[in-house]
Amino acid sequence: MGLETRIKPISYLKAHSAEVIRELNEGAPPLIITQNGEAKAVLQDAASYYQMQETMALLKLLALAKDSIAAGNVHPAEGMADRIRARAAAELAGK
Image 1 (cartoon, rainbow, N blue to C red):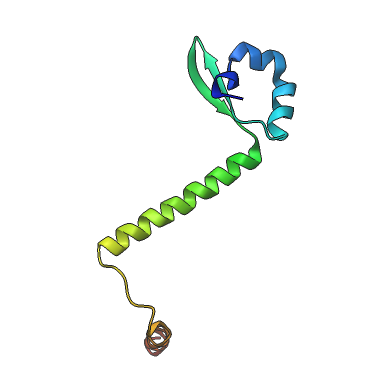
Image 2: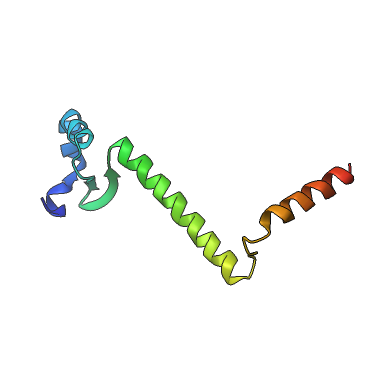
């Protein structure tokens, strides 16, 4: 099933909303909704949407990590426990 079969006018969605929702929940690909011949919305099931949001969040974290590495804001893992203990002890001493 190609993408062209998943593009429908808003009138189709209005007339077949229950069927569209059922198909999406059964695993059908997202549906592109057009208005006046232009793509205006994408309709997908909630589980796929949440999964996509989690994927986007992970990609953002990876991009931030890459930027941090490029800026030199990294420390070797070796000795990390000692650095954490030293920081915690310094914070306790400062109270």
